[in-house]
Structures are given as structure tokens and as C-alpha cells.
Length: 181
Image (cartoon, one colour):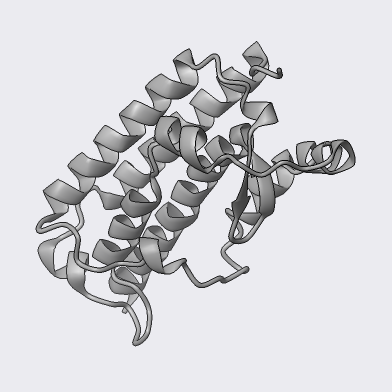
């Protein structure tokens, strides 16, 4: 069973912490008007981006225990193991657009900006604690991802960081559009 190496664990914690910080910095100082305003028709508002990130911040302990049921062959496992950088890069790439799965699309789940941020912070803190402490063999647990195909548990952790960075960049773009418009 492949538990995380100390390097993998440190990298995962670092990426989760830095993407958390980037999101919080992107949200800092957003006015009430900016929070709910769309920079363009058909695009998400900052509130919708933040809600989506928060909805996607799945509880890793529960997810790994219930969703990691794929059983790839040994050859597929070697292929999957090589996806770390793909998950890191591709999911941060804002030139590649995709449609969010229905379950994590913005639906007005949170009444206020503060509730959205607090919920994200609580979920991220729980995920950071899980990554720091887990002895689960994350490299041997697999689940399908809507854009990356089947990935292992460690790559799901990398996904959370990359996904947060992706939408922090989107929020930064929206804020720039407001300031230059």
C-alpha cells in the first residue's frame, strides 16, 4: 500500500495552503457590488466563483472512503501515477474551459460572502488536517475526475489546490475587468 512520501505530503500541504491564501487575497476588499456583479453576460460573478470553489472543496476523508472505488490495472496505475503534473498544470490553465458538473455549479447555497468564505475555510482546514495526518494509501485509491479521467487520491488533493488557484485567477480577472471598465 502506497502511503504518501514526506515530499508528496509536504507538496500537497504547501499547494493547499498557497491556493487558500491566493483565493482569500483575491476576495479581500471585494465590494458588495463587485461580489454579485457579472463582468460579462454569461460569465460567473465573484460570488458564483467563490461558491463553486467552496462546493468543490469536497471533504477528502469522506470522499476517499466512499468514492475511491475504481480498480485500474497495473498498467493503468503506472499511467495514472504520471498525471501529477497534468493535474497541477491543466486544471490551473484558464485557456482551457470546461463546464462544471451540476452538483458544484453555483446555486445560491450561501446567504452572504462571509458564510461562503467561512465555509471554504472550514472545509479547507479539514482537508489540510486530513492530508497532514492520513495514513490512507492515497496512491492506491482511485476515482474518476470529470476532466482528468481516473486519478489517484493524492492527485485529488492536487486537484483541490489547482482548482482553487484556477478560480482565484478568474476572480482576479473579474476584479481587473471592473477596475479597467
